[in-house]
Image (tube, rainbow over all chains, first blue to last red; front, side, top):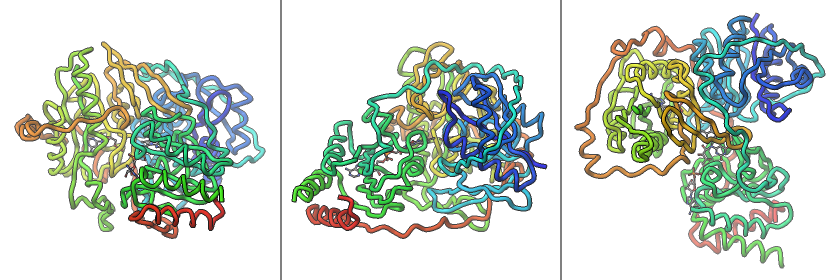
Length: 323
Length: 263
Ligand SMILES: Cc1cc2nc3c(=O)[nH]c(=O)nc-3n(C[C@H](O)[C@H](O)[C@H](O)COP(=O)(O)OP(=O)(O)OC[C@H]3O[C@@H](n4cnc5c(N)ncnc54)[C@H](O)[C@@H]3O)c2cc1C
Ligand SMILES: Nc1ncnc2c1ncn2[C@@H]1O[C@H](COP(=O)(O)O)[C@@H](O)[C@H]1O
């Protein structure tokens, strides 16, 4: 018997989409290895909300009183549950907290841990996790000597509603002294304007290659030329730098998009960005570095200076539309 | 305040990263350099020192790696660290993330820092998580991906982007903080600093020196085994245009978009 414990992240009364994916994946894997899948939630979660996880395939939800939004209290909670109840595996959907909790939990339990997992297979009744490495040029498979902790890549696991239900069990966990030494002062601050990139058919995405905040004007002009349902999106690098609003960010800690056309200007194509846009129908990239990773997954790649290309492209599209 | 900065030697970005099929480990031949993400951690330490809010007695660069990793330490020192510590031992070869974090925690324990800084990711390992492992062993609070850090006596006010936007977190020291690459713009080392780096103290340590339980590190001591390397499904290669004549380039882009009814 090998049970799987899944961390379900929630915020403002709703579960994280990636956590729900992990819950479904855990239920599916548990049935293949003859175990059960359970979920764990911390903080302010109503019976009703916790119970909803049953609909994604877990039979039991453990609920603990602990601060939300920080990793270390959750490590305390999960370590206790896994030790007391004998779970063999822990599973996390893609996201920042999952990385921190999963790694800390591995340290605490002496477990093996794999991050950025894109697929989990069952081999001889045990879990084996596939992880792309070295800029996605190769895939390695991890197996675990004893307990295993698997942290999914963003959007790797799909959620499925099963119509099942779960019992909710409250657990008391004493937090480690160091786990309470980090305190959330403000959570989920939205920086910059509230823009909608998820509904757009065409996205002109800008990165550090735009050079400065004003560089985004080039992207906005191009978006305007396309007209219709077109929006401007951004990488985390430029959002962190304050050049563009957080709401426009694509990637691991931003939005997941799949427009008809995604046109990247001055974006390197880091994995954490790629995971948020790789399902786009047509990917066009302009980058001056011929070795930029983004060219490995674009349909049309232009090696050149965006400062030269974007203004002319904007004019040409305007002319085409006008004519 | 004493700050330890974790740094790592990685293959130069310009060099192909490869797996050696015989050993299943990263091919370590070819050019190597200080992990670029770690220069942000050193710079963050320098800015705390120069900021003057707290007095920084010492900045110590710490690495675990083969003999060649000394070069990464020299680079770290040229960027501002006062001295460095090199943990190197055959027994460590093949350590996974958890074992590496455990070994680094043991070295750090022997240094008793008030603050441990590290980079957001290593260019070759890409695990983003050594900090969380180290923190659990050291029993210190920890945060990753920090892009703003205000230091005062006994605590740090940190900002970082998480799943739902920007979080502000107050962290008591001693603490382990991994910094995002947007936290600062690392300085270039002066020629004098580069020349002087080799003269700064460098302690070489083995597992025994810092009380590392050898059964918990190396390939055998790791709780996860990696193998079975395979190539990912290949997406058909896209069309590439080298921009020589921009008017022509733009014409080609427009034709490409038009063909797909995207204009
Ligand atoms: C846990 C974690 C979560 C993350 N989450 C996200 C996320 O949600 N979203 C995200 O985007 N990133 C995320 N990142 C960051 C990610 O790893 C990259 O750092 C980021 O995507 C890089 O942004 P960029 O492409 O704008 O910048 P860079 O990587 O610096 O690339 C800039 C590119 O512009 C090109 N360029 C420069 N000048 C020109 C010019 N004149 N003309 C043409 N090209 C030019 C350069 O060749 C370069 O390729 C995350 C990282 C971590 C560790
Ligand atoms: N062998 C090592 N020695 C020292 N520091 C390391 C080592 N491996 C990783 N680190 C630190 O941990 C950070 C994150 O690395 P990773 O978890 O491998 O992505 C790096 O930026 C370094 O600061």
